[in-house]
Image (cartoon, rainbow, N blue to C red; front, top):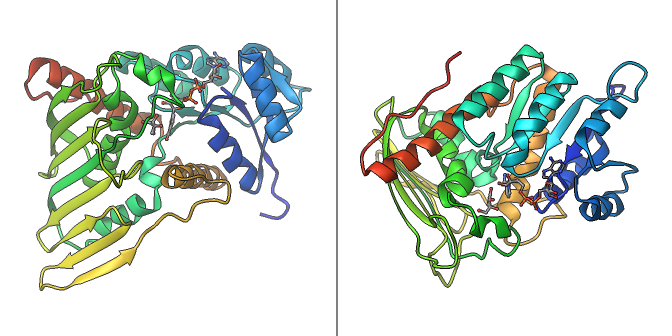
Length: 354
Ligand code: NAD
Ligand code: 89Y
């Protein structure tokens, strides 16, 4: 890395989750966030003080004009950490200014908008990466790697379960107001894990419920996926589950294959059961960064891992796993889940094609 040019980025959206992204950028070598943007001057000032970054803007257009183009200070990428409503304006703006783009989930707000933004990035020759971090949690990643290495043969059944009663509305009050809650906010990550494990989905069905009367959307969802390769997977999510030992924010995973089974348990133990009996047990607990705080360890660790991979991918001229086109297929599962829940029927999800 010695002698390599520092990659310069700007962060748009100085909110709750962006703090993790900023801490991760500051921990990584060879990258520097040189400017901050938030339309709320108080949040901007808070981040400026917290991270010691001088250049701040309340308007993204002004920021790009100041930092890009000939004779300017230079910008390689933008990290968009706003909520979804801002993507439709910010992604094309960044693409027009020729900078690579990282954008938070849930991307774009609709499949039609996602398609438009993906095409605009391609036409402007900039990369689009979606900050889809759950598949980068150490426990989840190790499960993916053991499966991909063929340790249990061909999988035929999976269950990815995320059940908690953690008060997510405290730090993210907008989650109580949205009409679409758990599938779009959280299920999207779990569906992305399902794709990372078992590939694309041919059809799915879904049932939802709202248990908490104080919110507008669904806080429970149970999905059944039929994957192209024949795997049947159950994805179940809940923010209405009361447990003395709440696993937030862990995804627990069960996979049965024709040559063994995997079990990712709540105590961060990954069991690899062989066809001949016997079981290897791996400790896959998070190795969280120093700035990480309970219970967010697995997520904060995965933010650092995702951003480290993005940087590595950029150095080697490859795309990250969750590039725009890839994430379109995760978004398509979210859309299909809401359609399936409304119709009480199984639905064939859309799939990316040009
Ligand atoms: P937030 O409301 O706390 O922060 C968003 C910030 O963006 C606000 O400060 C707002 O003023 C700013 N903003 C909005 N539009 C803007 C614009 N056009 N220009 C400049 N600034 C603008 O939200 P949050 O809880 O931090 O969530 C942000 C995103 O992160 C959401 O999409 C959420 O789903 C996602 N998120 C992801 C994870 C994960 O693990 N990947 C976890 C939590 C949240
Ligand atoms: O917004 C959500 C996410 O992406 O991960 C967990 C979360 O913060 C609450 O569901």
